[in-house]
Image 1 (cartoon, rainbow, N blue to C red):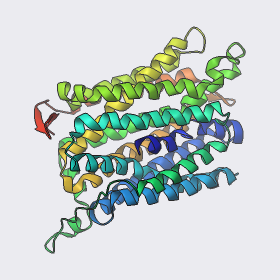
Image 2 (image 1 turned 180 degrees about the vertical axis):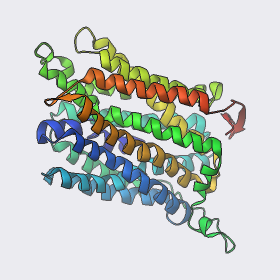
Image 3 (image 1 turned 90 degrees about the horizontal axis):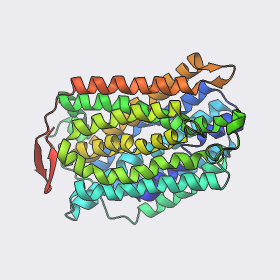
Image 4 (image 1 turned 60 degrees about the horizontal axis):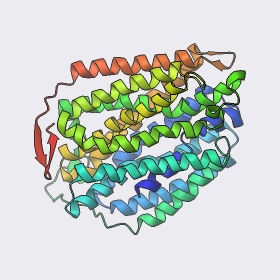
Length: 411
């Protein structure tokens, strides 16, 4: 499940920029709007589907239905020839796909806990298969010559429908249905997870999750087109980086698989605040090395940036998911994961995609040529400001407690 979940995304997420700019020739501002669909879908769907999975429908069945519908939407994208229509079709696909990320976590946690496994130890290696799936999809898209073609969407669509069908064979994850006739309307609708915003520490955690979610979208949106743009410089035009930009970027996902395995140690030893702070500083380095890298003498910077990405992504995304899982009531497991998804890939994605699209077009693009050095440096400064603010504002003392036999920070 984890492998196929992220294979669907990896087949097109990193390379859609090449399809947009090189094949279709559409504008940067419009491209920012396309990536904002991830955000708008994450605002609406993860929390909503989390409520449904917590109260009424088996999580694995809802997960399968969403993947089948999302796959059908992806299959329609190659038929679109107008950026406005493209927005609505990709939005439909994202309405189905984005909630499956948090649902896949809920399904995994449910199955593991039902069978007596320690999620802190067992889940990260399982989640690593998602990263392997993402890498495999990127390689397939690049090596088949489809990083700028519409076929990337067909690849994603076929896998999505297959995963949807496969999902019905997963162990059952029924809703808990723990409300009674005296329950409030909030409990009846499964909206209890929103009470988490009443906890100042968790609310602040969600706010910084939003800002880090914005940083993630910057990488997804511009990484591949940045490397491909070196083709406009004669001495780099025939370089390995230009020809196989997607494969170079897949180093980031290889790095993810390694850092995922280190998460249990870091969480238990240092706690969520330190792990999140490490993630933020890693984002600073990720962007800074891109700013100064090139396909020749600066190739090591590009490679190092990709390696650092593994720490930047995992120490935030996976650790954040585990933090929510171990500090919230099992009755609202899917809803709480949906809220985390809403803040990161919802508000964060909207903020990161729309603002970056405007800023790049307004301040870093001259006659159609992008100043990538300035773009990446501005992104690095953004991440640094977030890191400093987090270190000062997020008050948290790491005091390990026992959760299913493992140490974990108390919220």
